[in-house]
Image 1 (tube, each protein chain N blue to C red):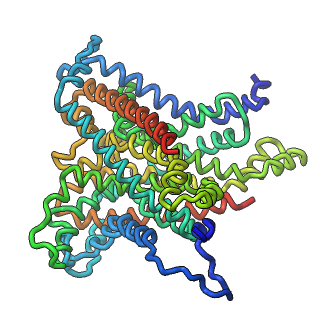
Image 2 (cartoon, rainbow over the protein chains, first blue to last red):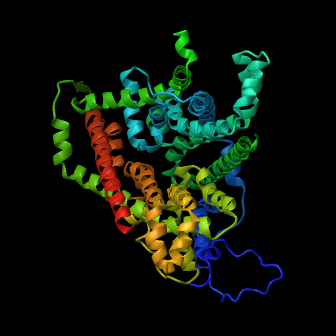
Image 3 (tube, rainbow over the protein chains, first blue to last red):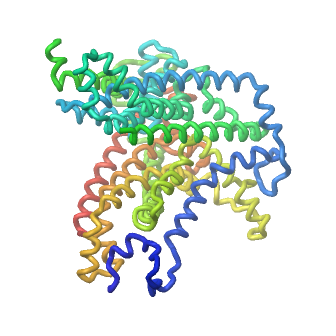
Length: 283
Length: 287
């Protein structure tokens, strides 16, 4: 091997004036694979919107024609609107509770070195690795035993549980870049603990908070299995969609609704990503 | 007490307590009750609270339970292997062959910011008898009859889950590739390793931690997946989560459902620990 390894690793920069290297053309297999893989990843996500405009009830090629009627019909369905309200309520409360819990916990993990920190950090991440069906069934049993009937409240309790790891990790990265001396300066200048938190800490980590609120909202908004077990007769949007999937006649409406949800999730999370990046670059 | 709250430990514990207590309580309490239920029995509408091993006996002897349990573990294993193997080249590509790392990482994660339920549903539409794939292939003249092996079997479940968990494999492997000290690779080349040798003896062993992390993140939740086997699995692709749901829903046998949940969790844990031990040993072996 005559070429240094570093040359192969860092793709050769466009060598400006020197003669082009005598490198024989090699088909970029990895790039081709990566593009094929992207198509595989995007196929199901782009399919729903594509067929939601199709003027026919069967999802198959060839497509029939363009229509917006499936979207127009959505507004007339009362159960759908009720499920949408339920999801918005559950998502909003979940986002607020999970982000508040995550804010304080992340602050502790980043700022203080204390006994039990690693245990506590591990515990908070646990919901990510427990299979959903086990969380759902065990919580149902617990809530019924405590006399809590399945309702939006029980769904919120479950969703805070699954959303918490996301809130904690986002808030941790927000606090990671936070310059401690700013708080000390505020103390020295006579601010109280709460005043410092409100007027110095909070504004600086605010983008992280917004990101966490958006992500936890979306986690709750899209979550199905827990809501399926815990919502009783107050379905959230995914539970409503689940009940519609079985009826072929409702398929186009489900596609339209699904497309709107996909769009909402992606927009919310792109916004969250924007804020998250701002929060980690700010200092 | 006030003095304690002024110390590092006191402040740290006080601030992190709400979150960790919330998770701790919602793990421990349901688990405790689940254990209690697993020793009780369902007698029509009532729960008989005499302690008995009957549910565990039933879980151990019922061929359906054993069959679904083994199938869930096999499917989750296949999903894990397929996802990790498909993801590795992408992670490698992003780590070594492109300058636009952030863009590629973003491109790969965007599809997964959408509802899981809807993505699985979309696969059902793609793979169906009169679905997108078949109708497209027929329109193109590549096949004459719809392919029937696409939907309602283990293949559909593995494909759908391999899609659903893709970023969870790509990201940890990418991180472990990114961490590799580039001078190690140069050294391997200088010492006369071919590219393939260098990959097998240097790069691959150094990414074993990433592979283990990816595998666990995928394997554990996949064993208990409910949505995918329900929508695309048909009768051949049913998994243990479907059986658990039946006990808590239509069959209304919560004690058996609780037992199955616990048995599933224990089996997952056992297989996961076994896997970590094996993979770590193998990683050392190659080096």
